[in-house]
Each structure stands twice: as structure tokens, then as C-alpha cells.
Image: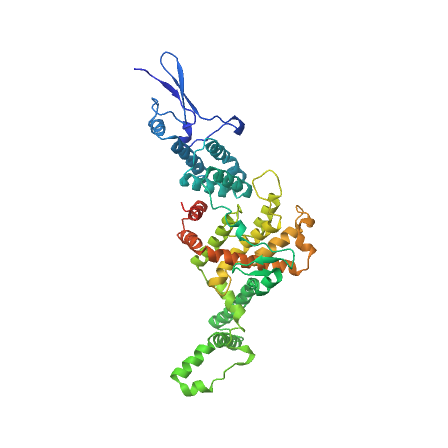
Length: 448
């Protein structure tokens, strides 16, 4: 019986070792599997592993029975799994480790081998671990060429950029034509955020109540009368300011004579909720835990980034990441589209405003999202030494120009999320499960 001693190129990958592909310029159209018979004659077959060869291991034998696309998929998934299984890898280490996966995907593209959704999700998750927009952009670009990605950046043209000419007309989402000024006049203002003041107020009240309680427990006679009066006054003011309408309704229902004697309005604006509103909002921030609300904001940010073609798949957008991405897009050695343009800056602002628009639609107070990030992004660009001030066109305009950009971006984010609410809800549900990854969210958008 003919005995073959087989040297299988790249089979070590299936044992979770590194996959070393040739440099891009040296890619072969196939991988050769060499075999030597007892007479010393060498033969080889095309493919990752030749089907029908007498192999030295059960693993290699099983691998050879797969068709070419499945072989590539198995190797690509294995390479990505190795990165994801190493939590100590981060930043540059992940980028280096991804080189083999990138080279393999490039070879798949040259051989017209389509990647499966499973391997693509693993690749995106591995790229996300690098936390590098240039790396993510390259992965997405190669995946798009492979035919595995079709929804990335699909809504870029749906975003209406802010016209630089005040008299220029644009087609609004409702189908009407308005000038820039006419549309800005009817748009809702960007929600305000005073979380610093609110939290400070809540902590101050908590501290005062804590001191009063401590004095009562320790029975410090010198200050107990004062502290008792203070905490009773705080509680009374809080109850009257926030529940006065309920008190009036209850007394009119069960004690009509007493209810008719209650004043319609209390002095100092009590009863409207404004007197203690800041403190109550602060307590909401400190106490409230709403996982679904958090997932809604994260889903909105992710969907906006993906469909607008921004390779920044963090679930919590921030001004620093946005500014870095704009600076990197000005470089020539990457796959990033130029972002220091009217359209590019508007896409970034819409991404930053997406969580704000989502939360403001459903809740009266912003807790998970922060509208200050968008303004902070523009401020960072203005202070950056990597960006020429001449490219920041809004600096040449009136101070109201920046406010107009933020207001416009907030409106565009709101329209985008309302139109695509079904997909955003799907992403929210995946995130709420607690086990969703970046790849899972991409799968929801791509309908895998």
C-alpha cells in the first residue's frame, strides 16, 4: 500500500496556532499540499487541504472533506477566536494579531470566496477589540468587497447637510422646500443638560439630612431642636412642591370642605415642581437604574454610526473619539473617508446626537445620553494642533453658526431614528440580553 508522508501547509491553524499568510504581493492563487510516496516522488494538490489525501491526523482528514469556502471560513473564524480568547490583548497588539485575518480576507476576495456571517461577525468583534477606527475601516472595506456587508454607510445621503448659504433651500423630511433659516426656525432646540448642578444639589440635601439624622441618633441636645426643624422643613417643602396637585385632588374627593379652602397656588412657586426640580432630577441620576433605557441609547448610537459609514462602533459616543477620528481621516494611509468637510462633520454630529434624540423622545430627563458631547467635539477641533483653523469654516461665521449646526444635527438624528425604529429596537433587544457583541449588532443591521 502506498504510504504518503504529507506536509500540510496551514493546517496548524486548526490547532489554534498563528496563521502566517504570504505578503499581499506574494499571494498565490491557491495553497499547495505536498505529498511524497515511498518511491520519493512528490505530488501536490490545490486548495487549503487536498481532498482525498491520506493525512496524518483525524483533524486534517476532516478538514480536507470541507469545500474551499468552508475551509477559509473555519480558518478565519479560528484566527479571530484566538484574538477574542486573549483578553490581555489590546490596542496595537490586536492590530498586529489581525494582520493574518486581514491577509486571509484579501486572499478570499482575490479568489472570490464569500465569507459567512459567522466568520464576519467574529472578524468585526476582533477588530472592535483594537479600538482603532483605521483598523475597523479596513475590515469593513474588505468585507464590503467580499459582498458580506451591504448596509454600512447606506444612509449617508439621507442626512441633509447644513447649507452654508442662508438663502439656500433644502428638501425637508416632510417633503417641503425651506430655506436654511426657515427650517431652523421650526426645529426643536437641543435638550439642555445640567447634570453637574443637579447632582450637586441632591448631594447637598442628602448631606444636610444625614447631619440631622446623626444628631437625632446621637441625641446631641444642643442642636437637636434645630436639626429636627430643618429636616421636617426639607421634607415638607419637597412634598408640597411635588405632590400639591395630588393633595388637592385627594382633599376635594374625600374632604370637599377642606379642599375648597386650599389655595390654588402656593407662594414662592411651590406646587409646580420647579422649586425642588433640580434636586429631584439629581436624585433621579443617583438612584435610577434603567437597563432598557441604557440599551436604547447604545443601540441608537451604534445604528447611526454604522449606517452613516463611521467606523466607530463604541456604544457610548464621546467628543474625544470623534475628534481623533476626524484627525485620522485627514491622513492618507488609511481607509477612512475624509471627515473634515461639511457632510463629514454633520455625520459625526448626528452620531453624537443619536442617543440624545432617542432618550428625549421617551423620557423627560436625559440621564444616559449627554448633548454636551457634540458641542465638546467642535470645541476639541477648534483647540486641536493637528487641524488647520482654516478648515473649520464655522469659526468665520457668527457665534450662532455652531448652535445652528448642533440644532440641525439633532433634528437629523431624530428623523433617522424614527424612520428606522424597527431595526434600532432589534439592536436594543439584543443588547438588553446582556450577551450581544459588536458583531451581533452588525448582524441585526445586515439581516444575517
